[in-house]
Image 1 (cartoon, rainbow, N blue to C red):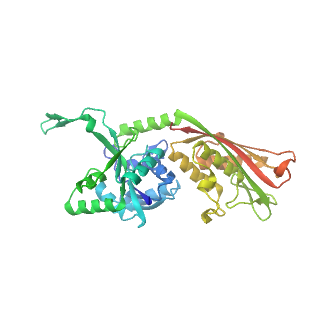
Image 2 (cartoon, rainbow, N blue to C red):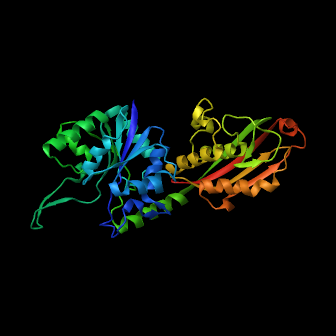
Image 3 (cartoon, rainbow, N blue to C red):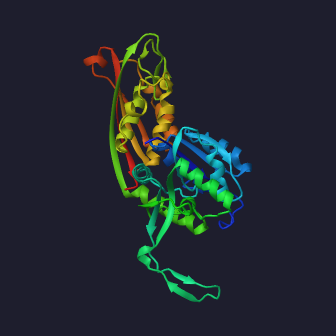
Length: 391
């Protein structure tokens, strides 16, 4: 299949938005539009790296206010774009790692793409080659001359409105852009440049909700779609984890360092509470478990803060179009007494998940001396989470 890079043109201007600010930096449900777009690509396991192409004067803003704070670790570079979108894509291709074999081009101004849609088009490209998303047009389309006279009614069944993402073998996309630059071709999308070379391009069904933010009315529609998604369906997940107590380790629960003579063994910081919560969230989103995403065979997770891993889980569930409803968790430990730390634990997790603290509940109990927790051999935790789904 080969490695896949995402190329996100993000040098949009606010002319038709009636704004002096890049439309991708405008807030949509309290987050910049570009954050919604990048979250899906960050969460997609088929994407190996992301290159954002921005106006030169906005590179630092995007790095400082979007890439860093929102944990977009797959963003390899924010590159300088050109005057036109076609120029930006061509320049962005130069910033992609040499071992990337496929390129997904997606407008930064399309923040409503869902993870299953992205996965479907990438897998379609693996089988078909160059692939674009599009939807059948709903309106009758007429050709009109310069005098505003109708000259033809086009057959609607042949007409599709093209969207992004569009996926191409890298060598073909680079060849097409080089040819276009040499010949002075200007295309309305990247697929049109391949078409000029006589290359085949296939269509995968897109979504009418995958709109492009262009005018103030588009922001209103995008907000309505996000609101509809958040209320459409509730998904629930259950999580469980256990770790052995051992000397020479810090005891970390809910991101709080607990004063105790023993700590929990594990590849990361062994925060059994956060691990149970992560498993519950991943379960609700049908994204597997923590072992799948953070294997103990991977050295980069050795000693890692579980709160940072929780932040990545948040990115994954947001990429599915999901938001946290609430979390209820229980720690099972004979010792130490945990009541003084409960609010801190809940607050840490609520902060990482960007929800009100009232949506995260942490409890603790003992087993009255029974079992491995009762004997002091280890600590376990249970968690239940619900998410609001895009449906």
